[in-house]
Image 1 (spheres, rainbow, N blue to C red):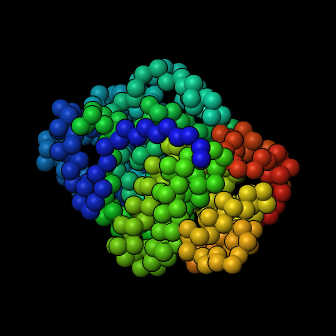
Image 2: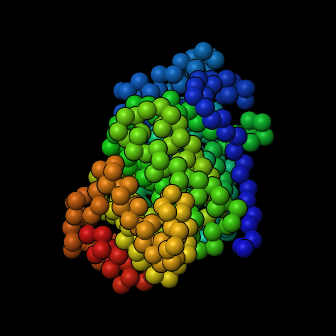
Length: 397
């Protein structure tokens, strides 16, 4: 069993209606002014209304920055920093999915630290441990509106460098959502805010949550302490994602947000792997592809590659998903896990090939080459060079 050291300095309130406490939480800290970071879709759908009403009821002044788009860029972060510093706001409130929360995290980082955002990119686990963030980030409260990334409780952000067409990993413990509330960090997790999420986004973000648990579970050096959580999420998503996708039933959405949240917790202590490496590189080159869809395309091919050397880990995945593995060898159970994942992808109508999402075959080699520069590739359970990654990309195509 691997040794494990875990630290999780976040105060979490989970439950329907918890976002209505935003104003009370901010007021309890003596903060008077908030910058609400979100996107236009959330604002137009009325999802933001309850949070803003809560701020008004507590006498908190606020501005809204709603310019975040999917696959956020360095320029979006710079625009948010400009609004934050000009407005002199005490706290940032991020209301949205992973793109919104990642943008908010990086805005709080660059408000209190010098240099360019690119200087805080990490590409190896050693760079995360060494750290180069001099000052703790500006106070941040996270309120997720999708059941997918878990970004509300991790210290990671993914921001695209427009110049490089590359998704940078910004990740160090100071990026935890922060504030002195009860001596901890702050996240208000309200399933009701996911109620109006469209089916396509429900499927894509929900499968992303599954992939987090999957890769965290099989990652090189994954701590045993997180595996009960990863197993739970891998069982929960196949049970509740189809219902959340097909009907939007509230219990299913509650369970999905809980699963996403638990997977986000695990992300702080276990690495990802080639699924996220290849998917994020593809998203950097093709920003129109939703992250969760790129994840879905690469998941079965990467599983097939990894299980050749680590069948036992993927046999555990099959068991966690509820597959009957009695009488099967580890290799047979591992292949059954791939079948179960492909069935889930099909059930929620996610794409299964790169050609479906518009990737050109001529770009596969470049995707493989760029993937070697990502931090995620270091935790893939099976070592992979550019030729291996190219073969995986061809399998995905």
